[in-house]
Image 1 (cartoon, rainbow, N blue to C red):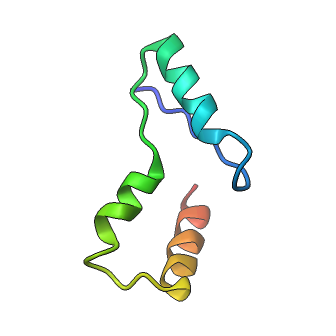
Image 2 (image 1 turned 120 degrees about the vertical axis):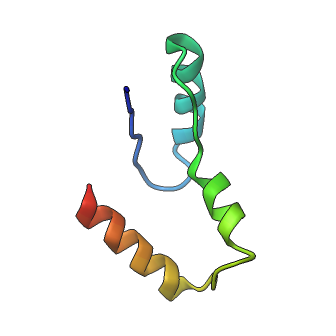
Image 3 (image 1 turned 90 degrees about the horizontal axis):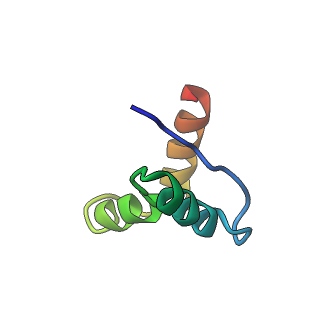
Length: 61
């Protein structure tokens, strides 16, 4: 399995680059906003919740 992780500040073109990379390589493209939209109705969507998720993710990677 190949995984490409694109990280950067908002509005710099991460999604555009990811889609272009996907079309050139054949890799699947997964945009993290999809996962956020799925859990938003079920989980508490507060700044505190996402700060904890972000800290956990950064410490894991």
